[in-house]
Length: 197
Image 1 (tube, rainbow, N blue to C red):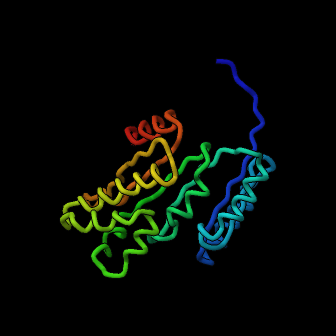
Image 2: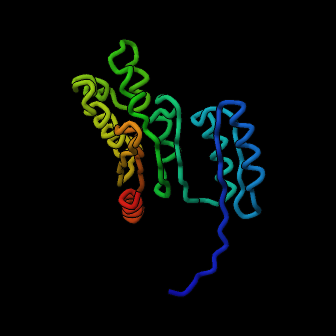
Image 3: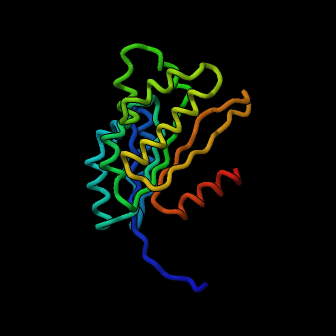
């Protein structure tokens, strides 16, 4: 294969709410920003910064490819119905760190239904999780499956997959990575990386 010379331009946008980590992130972004690939840091909640992120993305081109990585504490920080407008374009891939231990810990608590609906974007999910036995891993697996289903139904991703990340010291599931894409090649690369890991 012959090499193709391309001028690649892009932007990396980092979002952090807490002041001290944000200061470090802003310093990192400033240090690593280049003329062709800019790096910027925004302070606040990701979901509140979507409009600002879109403005930065617009400086790259009309239909740039977006790779969105969400690694958040808690589960209600990225409501599915707010997220869909940001990730709904065909040229977008999403990698989401699903902390299932947090996600299922409060599922029995009354009054939490709205926060679960916010995450999944579908009313029936919390009821399904509640019917499953505790301490077997079934609730966690169901929560991840339902999140994947929401990405298909609400955000219209064609391919959604998940990878389990184990906590080697405790021999149990630490969290799941959920990957969503509209590219068959993208999902093949994700599964290959999972197998290699």
